[in-house]
Image 1 (tube, one colour):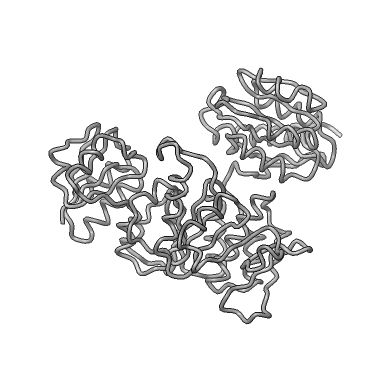
Image 2 (cartoon, rainbow, N blue to C red; image 1 turned 60 degrees about the horizontal axis):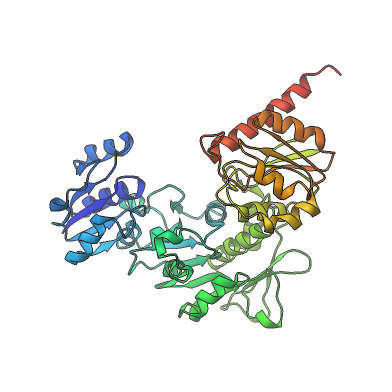
Length: 458
């Protein structure tokens, strides 16, 4: 078979290497420049490729095309392929053909990375032979070439789920559905939800979903996925008494799987996990359910929860000084993410926010800011909208364009037991390269503050 790969980044190059390893002829086409590391991989494998163009004559010779997730359906090259009736699949679909491993596939608008990393960590710490793949930055197809794992934990975006057809996860997890990337789905939340629900189409063991999320409940009810589903919720009551996981009055997660005796309920202690906030309780419930289905004991799960370190810039504790904790949530580039952060922190907050506003509506943050924020430090080139929204809500508001100044002022305004929270609710591009740069500079400023204070004579 002659396979054409569109896009030569992580997923595309992984797909090209796997397709060639399985005996297919392969041609790779990228409309932009190919990064040197990926170009080197293709060259060393002897795979033909082009960059900065899509040569339709060559592409339309394909028996099948693997499309990278970043290429939209409306792209001219995709429209040409559709018109000719050439099958288009995703890298995930291709990889699924060549592995017998159990794939635990995780999607949702928010929380995918945390849940994926936690599920992977729990299994790995328990001694399972497990790989990590997908939207976390590792090609599933390239790993399937060696196929040395019994399990893969795979983070999947809606774009990666598009053009999957027969791919069959062992477990599928849907965390939540909120409006995102709607320009790719004709500005239809229903179409976006349908893309997310593709994760459950061919699941072989269980489909795990968040029954506390209204759009997820709606999407599940409109599908056949509920037939082999495990639902989790924040609490158990008469209306949702068939949950597989819920939080008890003592704060522990209660787990009951259908194959267990009716009287068996496992109690998983989560209080010692470094993850904070209601959204992370949902992420933990999903990961713990997956680990339970995989056979981990409560003791193994509890041990893994304690040792877990989340990806940087997601409610990450980066320092503590004079009884004040400094939390880096630079990944919170939108209002909803900042809401989760403010909701999750129980202590009084000195809040650092601001950046490039994306048409934000801050209304949902006002009650939390009024209740929890002692002060707001606006960190941005243009802070007028933040000042107008929160000036009459928080007791103290000031602004700066320096991350070091923001950290120094936050430390001065905070009292022992408080939290300094960087949760910007905005993009970073006014003062920083990206959210990673913003979070890294915040952590460095906290470290510098601590070092300077320690160096002062007693």
